[in-house]
Amino acid sequence: MGLLRQAIVACGISVFLVASLWAQSMADEAAVWGLLGTWAVDCTVPASRSNAYLSYVRQGDALIHRRDFGDTRDEHLIDRARVLADGSLEIVITLTLSNSSQARTLVLQKQGEGKMRAVMNRDDAGNYTIRNGKLLDGRPSAVQFRCSVPTG
Image (cartoon, rainbow, N blue to C red):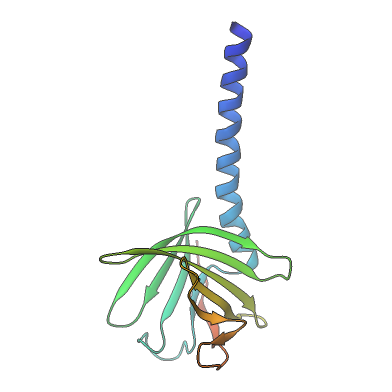
């Protein structure tokens, strides 16, 4: 009986350690990719509806997505972040809005040093706002520039 108890405790500890490492590696992966910091289409003008400032912040093992639209701000937990085979970064964000919640999956692609753009943005129902690097009207998605990097 003692050996069985030890095995159960060891399994429980292993599950806890794997979960902890996964959370750390997700934040680490996003940091190594270069996601952390504040991004905008134009860093020289204030945040607005047409020039949102999007920040990706590490809080302990968690990743937070902060959005500043000038007249309103919000923040949401990033549920998943992983580098894909082509070097792009896929993130899943649960947006908790006033009366609803939805998961959005974004794929971000580097466009050179300090630049990125979303090549895919899809909600949990499969509706796209960006697909294959293009908006619904066929225009390419905008390049975002790094406005600031985290200091801590």
